[in-house]
Amino acid sequence: CDDLGDGIGVAIDTYHVWWDADLERQIKRAGQSNRILACHVCDWLVPTQDLLTDRGMPGDGIIDLRRIRSMVEAAGYDRCYEIEIFSSKNWWQRNPDEVLQTCIERHQTVV
Image 1 (spheres, rainbow, N blue to C red):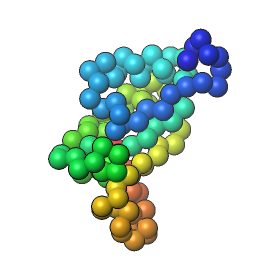
Image 2 (cartoon, one colour):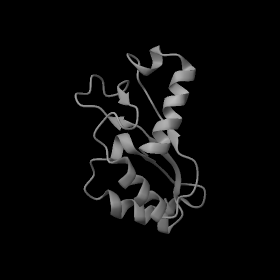
Image 3 (cartoon, rainbow, N blue to C red):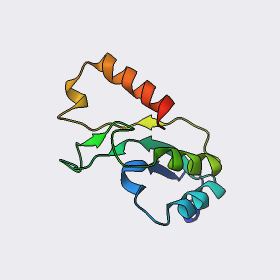
């Protein structure tokens, strides 16, 4: 990002980075240059049925979301968190008001 100039940064997406043993160092590195532009939150379900459309609601899987949020905030991120649920067989089938209420509750209690 530094080589490309201002306005270029990263989105910390829990679904794609939760397993990385070097995650804390990389988040800190991105934060030092003010390059964290977004944070996407969902959970990794076990078993996962589909790598694209089976992302879990926070708290339903195995990702330590509080730990990642702590790392991101320690790196200086103080913007919005996007609950990113790709769930064709579960959450996408539900009433949108129920999904929204669950997202709010899980963000307050799990993330």
